[in-house]
Image 1 (cartoon, helix red, strand yellow):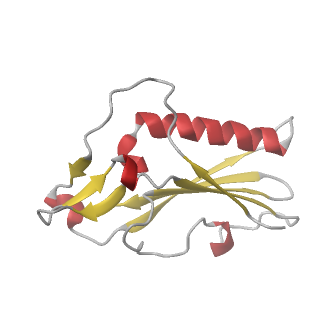
Image 2 (cartoon, rainbow, N blue to C red):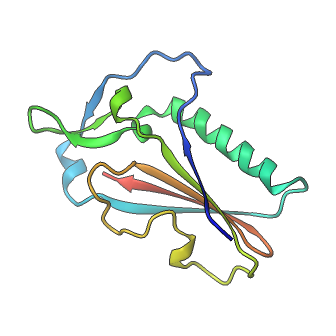
Image 3 (cartoon, rainbow, N blue to C red):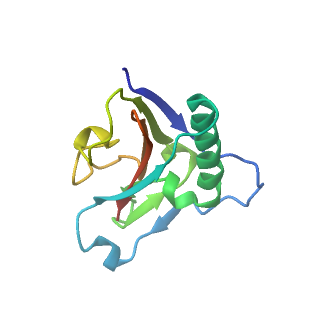
Length: 148
C-alpha cells in the first residue's frame, strides 16, 4: 500500500506568547553531528477505525508542537555564525507525518518502518518526523527526533 504523507503544523489552541525567532544552541549541543533518536511506541489495535486513530494522533501532535516550539523549527547558522534553532514563520516547515499499512505481521524493527533512513540528518531538515505503521497484528508509532 502507498505511504500517505501529511505535514503537521502547531495549533494556536493555547494562545501562547510567540517564542523568540531563534534559540542559539550551547556549545555542548554541537559536539556531534545531528543524529536521529528513535522513539518507538507500540499499541494494540483500536476498537474504532484506523483513520480515527490517525486523526487523533495528528491533532495531538499539532497541539504538542504548539507547546514545544523548538521541535517545530529548523537548525540554521544565523548571521553571526551561531548555530541556532530558527522558529520564526519562515523556518517552521511543518512536521512530516507518514502513515503506512502493511498486510504482514510485525517481525521486528526494520528500515521501512522509519520515517527517515539517514543516520546523520541533512541541513535544513525538520527536527521531528513521525511515522505510524499499521501491521497485521499491531500498530507501531514511530517518531524520530533530530538530536542537536
